[in-house]
Structures are given as C-alpha cells and as structure tokens.
Image 1 (cartoon, rainbow, N blue to C red):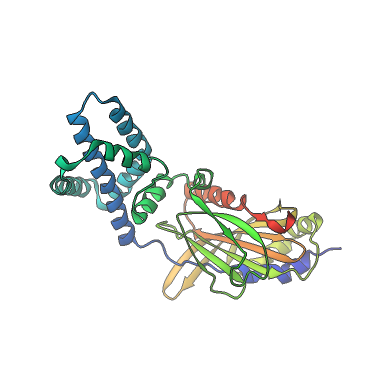
Image 2 (image 1 turned 30 degrees about the horizontal axis):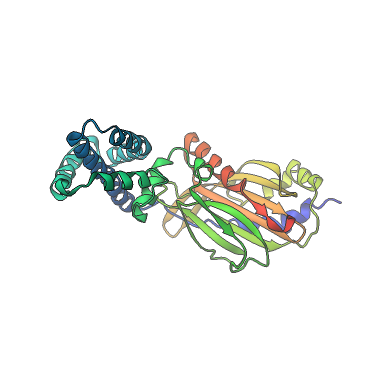
Length: 320
C-alpha cells in the first residue's frame, strides 16, 4: 500500500520549530573565553615556577608536559578566538596586563609541589576538579573544530524519555554532548530542546514525538515518498530543498531531509540550515530537527558530522 501521501499529511509540517533565534552572546562568550584562557595561563605560571626551582625533577617535567599537551587545543583555539575578536595588538596588551595581575595575585612561595601535581593530574583526566563554568568553556574550545568527537571521547550524558513531560509513554535514549543546554520543549509535541552553548551559529535541536496513526511504514513507502516530487511539498513554501534520503535505525524505517529557510522573528532575520530525521515505529513517530545559521561549507560539514554522531546514539529500548 502506498502510505507516502499519508506520511506527508501526518508527520512533517508541524515538526519544524527552531528553538534558538540568535547566536551566542558575543560579550558572554568573550568573557568566558578570557576567564578560561587565563585559567590556563595561571596554571602555566605555577608550573613554570616549580620547574624553575626544581629543574631536575623528572616526575614534575612529565606532569608539565602532560598538562601542556592536554590543554594545547583549548589554549590554541581560545587564543585564535580572542585575537579575532580583540585584534592581535589589544590581545597582547590584555595578555601582558592580566599576566602581571596573575603574578601579583599568586603567592608562589606557598605553592606545594605535590599538591600541584595531584591537582594537575586531576585536570588532565577529563578536566577534573576545574570549576564548572570554566570546564565547560575549555571543553567547548577543545572540541570547537571537531565537535563530533565529544560523544566518542565521553563528554556526553544520556537523555532518557522515561519520565520526561510529553514523552507519551516512549522509552528511548540519546547521548547529548555536555556542551549543550537542555530545556523542556515549548510546543505540545516537542518534549525537549537543546542549544549548543557558546556556538556562534545558534546550533540547536529539538525532539518531537507523535502517535503513529498510519501503522507500519515500510522501506518502499519511504522510497516512494523520496522519489516523488511530493517530498518538496513537505517543507515550508519559502524554503530551499537540498536533499532527502532514506534511513534505517533500531529496526525502524525513516528519512532524513535537509533544506534552508529564511526565518524572521520580530526584527531578527536568519537564514537557517535545517536537518530533520523522521523515524517510524509501530506506535510512535520520532522527529529530530537540527538547525543552525546557514554558513560556509566548513561549518556545514562540521555540524553535519556532529548531527550524525548524536543520531547514531539513538536507542529504542522497547526493541530489547
């Protein structure tokens, strides 16, 4: 039976709700970046002081090397970001000034070597012992250019639909990178929304659940839907269709569709790139809508890898 016309009617149009309409606050990101950068700088100054006083301590040298390696990506990306926002001259002046403040505020004579080594060993083990606001900024900048590695490296948590408002009795899990802010969805069928904290292109996504009122959706249904011109009618009229493809996950058929759309909210206009996954099981329809400000190919590739890394963690517990 050709169900694909029913798929259009029942599943698609209500799912596209963009949860975030502007980029991360420039001043907030700049402040957090400055704090994280000079956290690393203060750590380096303390280690340099110890090394100067005990140059032959091989264990200390190893700890310093590990710390420099572990924080290298974060420091490099933080420096690049600060220079691009402040200008190189102002950044150098700020760095010199704040380094002098650090020298004045750190009581080097009270630094105890073993305590520092213990603390650094914690910090180089998944940023342990670092204040949460600084830790999240360090993680963001460490993975700024390869956010799809966040889940593989364990910087994530498991979202479960069990007990979530509006979950409609579903039971599924999804791994979420810890750099995302989570909040309850603001539409009747959207159970959760997630914003990529500090991201410049307003990357966000939401999860939607609806009852499946059409029964089993086959691979043929999905193939016919995608091969027909009707697929392009499933996006808003002012949107630009990019592509659609069938997917199969957790013994369920579904599809993925990409398009761009210009959105206006109050006096803010955005050109948004959307990627939506629709997954059909026997009782429910699951919609995962990702959106970010339309940007260059480098960022698009980066975001698409991040989206794939998240969707690959989808587990439908009722299958097991």
